[in-house]
Length: 166
Image (cartoon, rainbow, N blue to C red; front, side):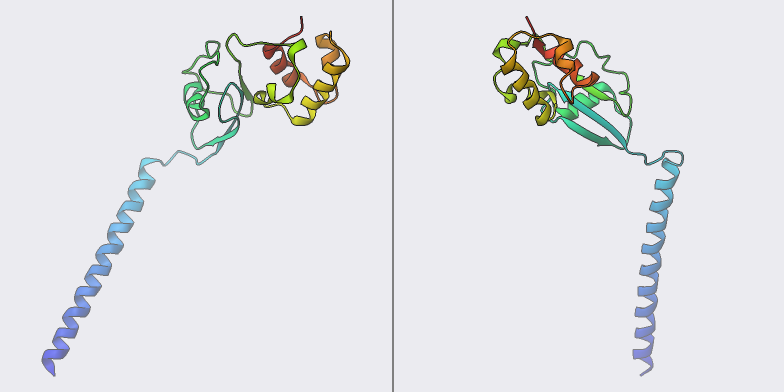
């Protein structure tokens, strides 16, 4: 009887020691993580990209991104003109990055389908209005295009990089 009690006591003591060891190891790991990044906030940075990229839209990141990192995430296409960007500079937050196409322009008279401009990140409603305007007027100006409902500064800038009116 005494031997059984003694065995149970040692088994209980062993289990208690194992639980204590696991607890201390877990606490030590948590303390080290907190010491490594005490000042760093877990802010989420939002970046919107459109134009000559495979993954256009809003991208989220836990750290500030450079143009190089953002272009890598967005999978910028090979016919993109990234020479205008300083790749090691940080991308300003809450602004849209429009990656222009390199030597690729669409002439106004050849604009016949909204899919030709869908990669620019312009809403389908605006593209339909623009195509309707194109079918009504073969020759137009940027002032006339700006008057179309829904076209603002940013959309007009995207169109100027891609469309040739002459």
